[in-house]
Image (cartoon, rainbow, N blue to C red; front, side, top):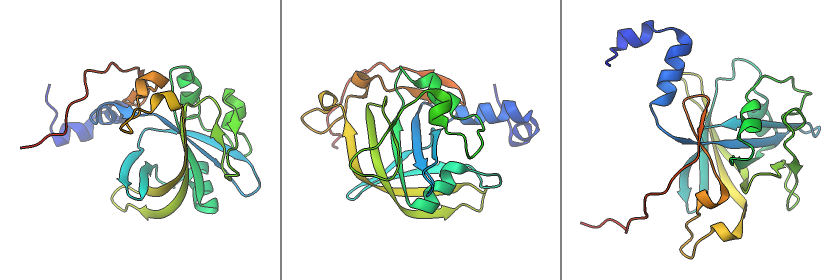
Length: 202
C-alpha cells in the first residue's frame, strides 16, 4: 500500500490521525501527574515522553496545541513541577480513560480509581499503582509554531522504582514491572525481550 502526500491529505481525519500516529512504532505510556495552586489534581496519559540527557537527567515531552483548555499543561506552567508515572498492565485501562475530557474541577484520579501518592514533599501527585515514577521540575518550554504543539523539558529530581528491576549496570528491566507500550492512539501491548547486545564498536 502506498500513500502520496496528496492522498494522505485527503484521508478522513480520524483515519489519517490513527495512521500517522502508528508510524513511529511502539511508544512509552506514561501518566503525567499535576495539580494547580489550589490543590486540584489532574492526571493525563501521554505517549510522547522521550529521553533528552543523563547529565543532568532531562526528559522531554510534546503536548497538544493549547487551543482549548489543557489542564496538565496549564498546571505545569503554573507550578513548574509534575510527575511522570509509567503505565503497567494492571492499570492501562484506567490510564487510557484519563484521555477523556474532564472539567477542571474533576480529578482524573477520582474518575478512574487511580490513587494519588505524595512523596518526599514534592508538590505534584504520583500514581500509587505505578512501579516506576519520577518527580520532574520544568526547566524549559517552547511553543512549536509548525503545528502549535508545546515542547516541555524537565529535570528529573527524584526517582522511585522497584529495586528488583534495577540491574547492576543501571539498566531497568521494564518487563519485570509489567510496563506496557502503546501504538497508534489506543492499542496497548506487553513486551517480549530478545536480548541485550554489547556496546557496538567498529
